[in-house]
Amino acid sequence: MGKNKLVIFSAPSGSGKSTIINYLLEQGIPVAFSISATSRSPRGQEEHGKEYYFLTAEEFKTKIANGEFLEYEEVYTDCFYGTLKSEVERIHQAGLNVIFDVDVVGGVNIKKYYGDQALSVFIQPPSVEELKRRLTGRGTDTQETIDKRIAKAEYELSFASQFDVVVVNDDLKTAQEECYRIVTDFFNRE
Ligand code: ADP
Ligand code: 5GP
Image 1 (cartoon, rainbow, N blue to C red):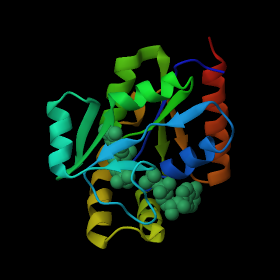
Image 2 (image 1 turned 90 degrees about the vertical axis):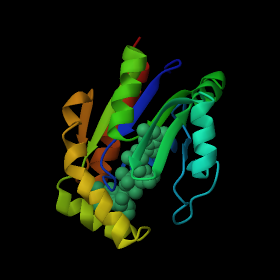
Image 3 (image 1 turned 60 degrees about the vertical axis):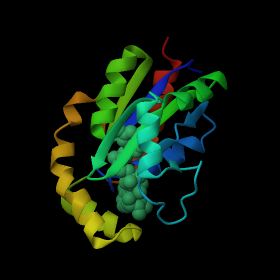
Image 4 (image 1 turned 180 degrees about the vertical axis):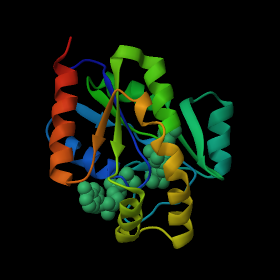
């Protein structure tokens, strides 16, 4: 099912991307999550080498200088995130398709780079008010971090039309099933 394909998920923070991706990873589809590198600190139960490779800003910059990133962005001021080329190689060598969780700019860039080999999915929240509620309810960020993320949400929402598919995450179960169908249809396509 699928060969060397890539599925990109992007959305404003709090839209439910990670929740949907984690659901897809449990469905027995031949996919693996591309573990990004970041210079932010772990939050909640996050572990190095699972959700992210947590690097210092210096380590991150060294990898930029060494050309180790497929793409990277300073998503929030002083907070770098990037996809290591070695991640895509690791997953494809294992015979699996790749799932990315990247910001909207990274998502558009990865899609351009891979063309038809990739499918880009934008997860849209019902409203910015609901985003605020979800970020607060998640209970993993300070008020300052939540404010920074909300401040960026309108800008990020303006990228939706540049994605192959837009899925509104209002009712979670409906959104998860829709994403499952979209991803498996894409993998089954020649
Ligand atoms: P993201 O990865 O996009 O930042 P998360 O997956 O961490 O977002 O979701 C943010 C919060 O919203 C989490 O606490 C999650 O459980 C909750 N959430 C996700 N989808 C929904 C939904 N459809 N309705 C209500 N809460 C949701
Ligand atoms: P968070 O801090 O909530 O885990 O992620 C913040 C933002 O960074 C999200 O929009 C997430 O998709 C994005 N992000 C995570 N990894 C990468 C990456 O490798 N590249 C880019 N461009 N963005 C990323």
